[in-house]
Image 1 (cartoon, rainbow, N blue to C red):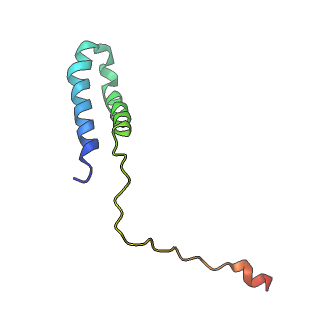
Image 2: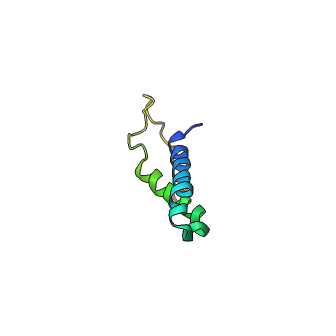
Image 3: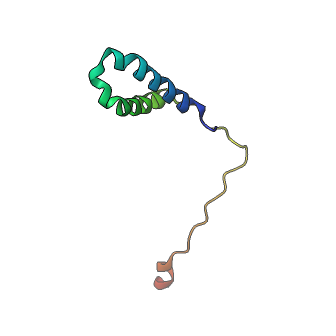
Length: 75
């Protein structure tokens, strides 16, 4: 598994909504899945890893510049 943090957030939010929120507010039972998805997205965004990605140490490879077709017409 490459990203366990969002998976754990999704599982915990689903369990809390299904076993805590829905029994307390049974009127939300039709919206439980949508509520789980929205809560998971918001929590995953705010609880994301904010460290910059690790640098491999290699210099970045330059992107080749495509030839300009208009330059030949101007000559």
